[in-house]
Image 1 (cartoon, one colour):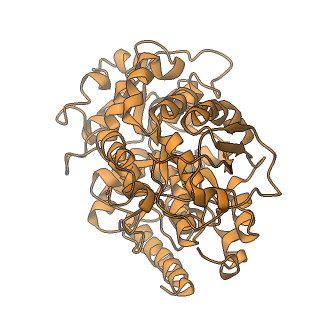
Image 2 (spheres, rainbow, N blue to C red):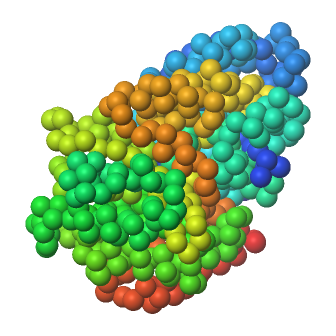
Length: 499
C-alpha cells in the first residue's frame, strides 16, 4: 500500500469529482482507521472476519466459505447522513446475518463527502469503505486512495459469477482500471426521454412508448418532428418548448442529456482507460451539431444562456408544462413524485420512452453513471471490508437499495420488484420498463486517473455552454479549442504523475 507521505496533499484537495454515483476487472477499495473528523454513526455486527482483518495484517484474498471466530470493526462512509439513515441502516441487519462477527460503523460526513475523504486520506485517517459516484472513481484510483478488490473477486467464484451475470457490463468496466475492479456496483442510472403525454396526444402523435422499439419510427428525425409538433409559440416567453436536451451547465450535463447523442453516434470523450482525449472528429461533431440545431435551427429548445440567466432548470420547465420532452436520467422521477416533487400535482399526464435511435448508427447508447462501494488503500481491515462489500452486493442488500435510493440498484434481479411498485411509488401506467430497457446499450462515464472530473471536463462545459450551444462558435471551432485545452491539462497531469 502506498505511503500517505507519497501523496501530494494539495493535489488531492484539488481533485474535483462529482458524486451521486470487462469482468477481468472487478475491484473495490478499503480505507483505514476510524477518522476523528467523522460523525459517530450507527453500529451493527455483521459477521466473522478473517485473521488478517482482525489483527490488522496484510490483505489476502478472502475465502468466503471459511469464516473465523475473530471479530472485526470497520468504518463505512455514506455520502451524507440522510443517505445513511434512508439506505445503509437498513442494510446493517443483512450484514449482521451474513457475518455475525463483523461490526460496521456508519460515519457519514455532514457535507462535502469528497473533500472530507481527501482530507482524511491525506491525514492517514480514511475510512475502510464508503460509496462514491462513478465520475469520482478513476481519479481516486489514480491517487491510490482506492485499493483493487480483484484478488478477492478472483478467489470468490460465486461473487465473480454474480458480477458477470447480474450486473450491467458498463458498471464493471466503469469501476475498473487496467483489468482490475475497484468498486462494488451499487446503483444504476439510465437516461430516457420524459415526455408530456397530453401534449403528444393533443398534437395527434403516437406516444413514443408505443414506437420506441422500432428505429424506423423512433429516431433523431422523429424527435425533431415531435418537438416541432408540441412546441407552442416563439421566443423565451412561449407557452411551451418542444424539448430540452442540454440539462444544466454542470459536468453531469454530459451524461444526463446531450452527451448521449454523442455516444449513440459512436463518438467518445476518452479512450477506455482514460489516457487519451477523443472528443472530436465527425461522429462527435455531427451529434453536437444536432443538439445545437434543436435551438438555433429548429427553434424548439430553450437557449442555454437564457435559461441560465433566468435560473431555470429542465425540471422546472417540465413540471410547469413549459416543455414537451426532456432528456434526463431515471432520477428525474424525484422531481415528479419523489422528494423534489412540486407542492401542487403535475398538471398533465407524462410518460417515458427509450432514447431515440441515431439514424447513422442504429444505436441509442446511454452514458452509464452510478455509484459503487469502495475499499480504501489505508485499511487495516481489508478482509473484513471485503465481507462488507459482499454484503452490499448481496441480493437482499440490492433490493433495499432499489427500494430506497431513488434510482435502481445495480443488480438486474431487483428490477422486477421495482417495476411492480411503479418505480417505488410513481403513478400507475407509466412506461417504467423503458428505464430497464435503456440498460441494454450503455458505456461508462468518461474519467481519467490523472485528473478529477471537474478539472477534466471544465473546458468542455465552459466551451459547450458558453460558446457552442449558444451558437457563438461553430461546433468544430469549439471541439478544436476544447481538445487543445483538455489535452494540455492531461499532458501536464501525466507528467506530474510520472506517466
